[in-house]
Length: 327
Image (cartoon, rainbow, N blue to C red):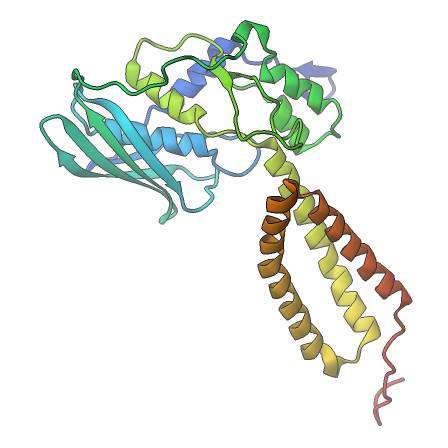
């Protein structure tokens, strides 16, 4: 539970939202504000990451498109493309383009923007209910029923117990409106080699309104996975990279004369460009051969340790005394 302290009082524990409250907040997220001219503005969802959850952007874009379609046409298909990361500090504006209104189908294009910059493009098709061919798998996959699977919320709570306090742990513990029950372990639980197949059951934690467009918006919202491992990797790599920058400047200043600065920085930039271009290629080749990135991880850490050893053994470049320069 989240806790807050009042001045001069004992710790006050804020109650967790009920399942009904979580679902009500989710449904409210799809209540867009119309601005006229097929323009809409979506509500913000603050999660503490500073970024817009992709499922939110897709679902709100679908709702915006649906607002411009006759009521007798239902969502048939959609394609979405993320262009830029969004900020949860800004609302999202949705502009809908009415490309087609035929006898049976309607087609819409939606551009989601923040501060004048597009962050998402979505194309959606809507169709009148009609009899026709049906395409689906002949049989259900042979998987356990949801009652026999552990809720992902319980898995995340157990995983969070091994994490230090902070943003990542809070994200793991945050209550969510979608109850997901995975048959196979998630990547952040078990990153080992396995077949590229993932089965899961999911539903909202409480009943939804009897409104099919809302159900389809929730499906779009849930279609984008929340990758806790992505945040973990991003934070760790970011801190490692940022932590080397001050050290880099100090090493140059303490060991090399100023006249060599351009050569050193240019050589470093060249080496970095070569590494960023060949690293993914080598990683892909290694994975194709070994079906694992373990060798690349070991090689990266080995190169880092080798660089550290070189720096520790390095002797400063001899400095030349310039006439008239202070001692």
